[in-house]
Image (tube, rainbow, N blue to C red):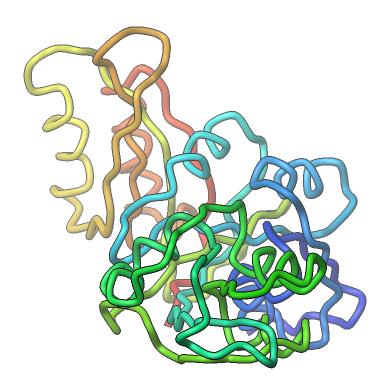
Length: 277
């Protein structure tokens, strides 16, 4: 595994204490320098402009599905996907130190976090308010000194902003993981246990997708994910985002990609990288 230095700079979306920051520390180590960004596009821009060496962005959640904005940004970016990390998401209800559970009338958080804690929050009977970030909600409650108010975020966010964890693990389903990808200007060398991510598009004719995927099947290359997104150029035509096992420098993977290019309108390799544990 690559050893990252204290000077390594990594951008993430959200405020300090966000799950994306936690994913960055899990992947790179706790000693790196982190750069909070307002939006996902800001993370891409920070890496593209050389303000940081890496970016960490969420791409899918095991319960809520894909992060469409990330997929759309990958299509238009020149950056490589150079790594991935899976983070177990544990949501906490957080408030000011003097607040009790029975006091809370309003809860702020990212809409996905609120959705993942639906049962707990419905039983609480409070008003739910969507914000751009989980940790940012905790920071806002502290800065504005909001009473009778809580936020759904990580326990680390409570520690950073000096707030109180009222309830832990309030998510409806404990099998709650988010997959994050690492953005970089550089590709990752083969590790022996790799995954490759690509985008491709095929003609809108019968059997086109089948013939494209056949290039992987005949070479015994395992596909781990396929996702479709509208091309935004023509109604009901799609780009396909595909993950498969293997590094693009391997012979059979090279052959599959060459075959795919012959059967597709376009193919873009996002990157090859070590598979997450």
